[in-house]
Length: 300
Ligand SMILES: Nc1ncnc2c1ncn2[C@@H]1O[C@H](COP(=O)(O)OP(=O)(O)OP(=O)(O)O)[C@@H](O)[C@H]1O
Ligand SMILES: [Mg+2]
Image (cartoon, rainbow, N blue to C red; front, side, top):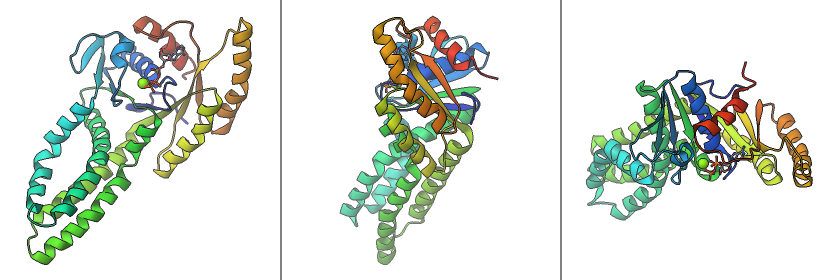
């Protein structure tokens, strides 16, 4: 149980369209208004942070307002950053293998790259957090399926290590082993453990949902998946709750939500916060302040 934003890094996850980006933007604004230098960063490859803050500047990070900076990580940026950090090492390693076990190594590379892209994003957030450039980092993620891929990285890495071990023994048999091979594999393992420790110790996880059957049914799975990685959801944001039901349509919608609100608020032993369904588009700092007020009104 914890308050939103209680750790240095605050992550928002959940299924598509429930309000992750809105919650992340409002949380980042909250920190910035409290005088904390804050970065709001999105690892969704179809991001909407710039749109929500109405920022045209292509700068990265772009300044939103005092103390608040925004960054959207695209697939190309991840590829580029990955190349910068690991490229020479990995490609150097490839060239060691080219003469032998080439097919097997191609297979190895194919299984390795998608997982490393996810891992790299966690690693990137960790680096930003540790760099000291910001006092708070708010992390907006892609819809649930992809997000949980991020958490799967340690098992991905151990899967990568299996074919690597086969290549390793083949090399050993031919006497072609370079010490660097094992070193690189060990480095990856170390990095993976470091990133997992970062997720466990530095990141506060918020699950955003809406009071509807499909969204609520998925919560259990998300909770279990987090648990299976030794991580926990710290807070639930229940978004788009109908408050002022002044028409038959809204009254009916509000009534439908009651059952799901009771289920979410009573069923997980996790602190939760309601955010109302607003009658306006949540765009721009002034509108986001209304979300901020609701997200943090019950803060101790
Ligand atoms: N409480 C609210 N009241 C009214 N509109 C809202 C509310 N919360 C979010 N919205 C609107 O719903 C839409 C989806 O919100 P948002 O982009 O934050 O969701 P998301 O979970 O980040 O979506 P995606 O999965 O596509 O990234 C946006 O148009 C947003 O303005
Ligand atoms: Mg979003």
